Image (cartoon, rainbow, N blue to C red; front, side, top):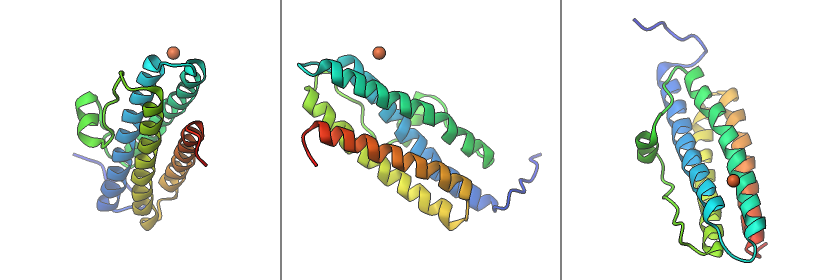
Length: 159
Ligand SMILES: [Fe+2]
């Protein structure tokens, strides 16, 4: 018998907010995994810089996963678990180790833009429900992914 959760949201609101966070968590996990893979497999004259930049980005993303998952739990929903669950939830495609460095940079830049879109959709659901704690969590993710996208874009030589 489940205890009722009295944190100021309806069960429907909690479910909808958690669904947005779950999608954001899955996209973040998939992009974490791809960025770590590109840290391993990137090649070329800028190897050292790219290897380090990818490490900074995957480390930042890795650290953020826990907060999103625990926010889902605080809302009273289960966090997704396992490769299969994440694969079904994410729209980020697996990386290709054979890709040239510039292709990796461009792909990661576009992936961050995808995650930003997922974050904005989740944010609007949380905002609609006056869930300030989730809004705060997602706002920080937006800031981080916009920064990652900028660094990748600038590394490619764009404004
Ligand atoms: Fe490493």
